[in-house]
Image (cartoon, rainbow, N blue to C red; front, side, top):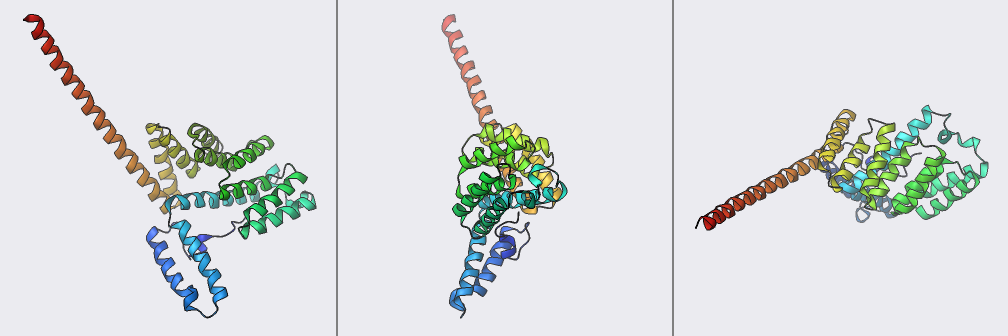
Length: 286
């Protein structure tokens, strides 16, 4: 399942590019393809729009994180399909009903053109014909994710898990949806399932760490984020590694400040208690 557009390729960058690299690449390409500076405006306008969209996503930390998740999830699924062709989700498309495969391929084309609602309609038709067409469910999940339809993601993930409970991507999308809906404990549970099946999945540790953080479980958050930090380093994902370091720094600083504040309050209470005790003792003696 190829991604509809590779924003890194559009900006001629590697996935570990820094924010500075992204800005430099955008400025260079924007000058080259700006419609006002070119005669063939139809072609350059489309190219400029692609560059602008890629920059908008990759220059924003949260949008880039979610894009990387989607991009890497598809890559993992593609690799899994290549090596595990006997699994249900990896059935060759030729083994499915031709009409289902036709609708699935039409959905892929619609998704590449960012016609997400129409893509959903095609994937839905494929699923109605072949109820165990897991790739169609996963692609529909991706479309729901792009449209912000988190309940739709949860419904599809539940169906995928019923068909085959070892599909890591289903638990991963499930974790994203739960977190986006503010259900941090459910997100933690979903990411834990991903880690149970795939113990070295850096993004699952990262997602669970952020969910732990927002669930006020600082110790667990720090532990998961440190693991994610090391795994991203091993993967060579420099940008993700730096992003996790920032979260760790912020979380550690907040924890220290909270501990310092609690310590000060505790000492203030103790001093107040001592002062009150001395006052009462003096009162009773008098």
